[in-house]
Every structure is written in structure tokens, then in C-alpha cells.
Amino acid sequence: MKRDIRIADLCAGSGMKAAGLITVPGTSYELPLTIINGVEDGKIFLVSAGVHGCEYPGIQATVELARELDPCAVSGAVIFVHAVNAPGFFGRRAYVCPADEESKNFNHISPGNRNGTTAERVSAFFFTEIVPQCDLHLDIHSGDIVEDLEEFIAVCNSPDPKVVEYCTEIARHTSFTHRINSRGRTELYNASAIDCNVPGLLFERGGAGRVKRHEIDRDKADIISICRYIGILEGEPVDNTAAQIFYPRHHWGEAGHTGLFYRFVKTGDEIKKGQKLGEIRDFFGNLLEEIFAEFDGRVKIANNTLGISAGDDTFMYGSTR
Ligand SMILES: [Zn+2]
Image (cartoon, rainbow, N blue to C red; front, side):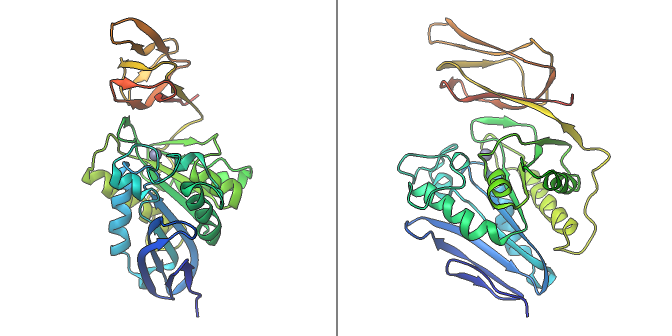
């Protein structure tokens, strides 16, 4: 008999689906979760969304797939965390968790602190009670409500090259045309890899607060393709090995000033080293800052707001060289 999967007081026996809100111990914070526990043994796949509450396609993809997947068709299990930052989702707040005493960003506090602020406690619960049960973690993002984005998949920054290679092979079996390797450690999928030795991947698709059917459907299709690749579902995964383009180098730009942001490129544009990408001015038209490309590349993420604060992201661009 295959074992039960339990997260706090939510438990799915073999061949069962369990769904509900669980309360993170030591807080009144509720996490919306679905556990789909198959009949046959296999890998346990964690799919989280809504770390940033206004990144919608992935949230809706998990809501739909959790209802559609039949545990009898699953070998192993799939665990969906539909919105890690449900308070940010309902409160329509970019990046941060409004239920946290210090409005922290879940991507900056992994792997959390049991005695910390509310978000830190949620993070600690996530990385002690959920992630260690799993064999693979996919965290689904998009551009936030203030960002335009051209989709890509990211492979975690594991110290183990075998984990990076394994995640790269999985990424090649999704429909994403562009792939990057993370160099960070702060985001959830990196914390899973670095702190819990659980391979991690990240989707970036959609953005600017839109809810687009084709983006939800493509997130769903790519989750299913990964399930097929790792043996959770029957069927052939997509094989994108020949077409997927790797961007070994990427750059995140930050605003150095608070002011009015003007951009001269958009996502998907090819840019040249030294090209002017944008500028920041004050209310009186005085130039505060010019933003130039540091190398030839392609714009993947661009801030879409007129107002910007020092420290906010401006552009992310990548290079295939
Ligand atoms: Zn995000």
C-alpha cells in the first residue's frame, strides 16, 4: 500500500485527492493546497504559484489542474500550493505579502524563520514541512502587475552540477523557447535546491496583471509535460531540445533614482551594448539617470509604470553569448 501524504492537517491517502486551506502553525496564515496522491509509486512533484500575488496565469493553471487531474492516472503525487501569497493575491499587491508585519517578499526570505515575522514563519513551514517531501519543485511566476515579460524558464542554482543537468533536461521538455540558469539563491526554487537538495525550476510567463487564456493553457500543458517526463503521468512529453535557446548571461537593472520612468525598448527587442534603454526624470523634466545596455542581448522583462522608486527593477535582458 502506498503511503499517505500529509501536510499539517491535510492528508491524502493512496488514490485520493485532498484539498483545503491549511493554517501555518504559529500564525493565522492560510495556505490553499491540493494533494493528488496516485495509486502507484513515483515521484512527488511540488507546484507552487502566487509567491507574488498578482502573477495570475500560474495561479489559475494550478486551480484548474488540481480539479482536472485524476489520482488514478497519477504515479507518485502532485502537490499544488495555489497561492503562497494569498493575502497579496486578494489584496492586489505587487511583490510583497501584506499580511507580513514588515511586508516581506517571499522570494527574499527563503528558507524562512520559525520565530520570525508571519511571512518568515510561512516560509519556514514551506521549507520544513512541504519541500522535503518532494522530488521536484516548480515555482510559477510571471511578470508582476508592474512588469511586461517575454516568457522563459529558469533552472535552479544548485551547487550540484547533476541537479542543474537534470533540471535542464526537464526544461527542454517544456514549450519554453528561452531558458536561463539562475545565479541567485533567494527565490523559492533556489532555496529548494540549495537548502533542501530538491531540484527546482521556475516558469515566467505572462505579466502586467493580465489573465490570458492561452498563457494559462500553456502553463498547464507544460506542467503536464513535466509530469510525463518524470513518469507521474503517462504519455509523451514535448521535446523542445532542438529549438530551446539558452541565455547563459543575464542582467537585472535597478533604478538608481525615484522619478518618472521612460523606456525606449520593449520586451522581445534585441539590444546592442551601449544602447540607451530608458531614462528617469523628475516632475520638472530634469534628467536624473540614463540606462544603457551593458552587453548585446534581448529584453526579457521591462518595468511598465511611469512612476518608479530607487531600487525597483527596470529591465532584465539576456544574452546567448
Ligand atoms: Zn514573481
